[in-house]
Length: 219
Image 1 (cartoon, rainbow, N blue to C red):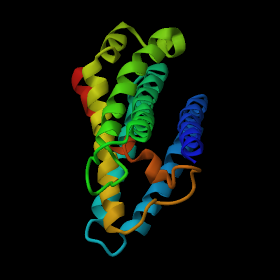
Image 2: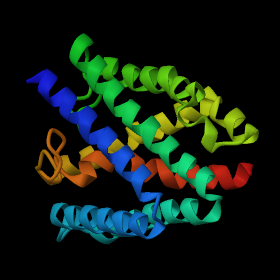
Image 3: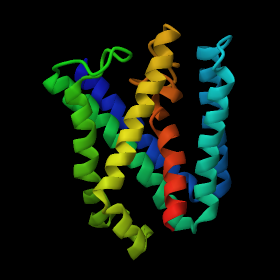
Image 4: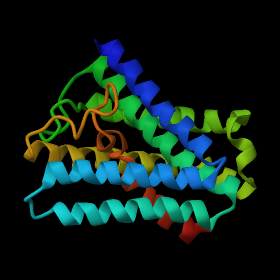
């Protein structure tokens, strides 16, 4: 069962990356895809938080997060914007997979009560995998043709990767907290092995606004 869920996570994660890559071939398809994801995740949040005081705060935050993705897409050149978006998704995906692998293998003390499946070993794995593989994937000509020298230097910053990973993990815990007080395990069941759309992008919706602000300050 563990291996089945693991491979389902990998397939759903990299399907998302591949689908977004295809969306960049036609910008209007990309817009349609992002808008569809926004409305599905907003609907899942509505179902989870209706009649709660924080309902509208969550919807506003989701809107801000998705707007940051649009701004990344339209502010920079086509290849560069593609790289930025894929970079954030890649780090978040590796963070999730690293936490899952290390948590299942090493188990150990629980990390926090609001998310009982999270362990300290999983948190460590959530840093190790993106720090180990992000530069390897990028620097082996998989994405290197999408960036210039200045961006390559930026990406080689392990501190940036670690910060995005930390924000992704924090976003996961925040959504887990709201799921817990709503007494649900998943925000939906649209993605095999992972639940709803919001379950899949919980870290990303926090990472993208940070990255947009960061990259604009830097560049």
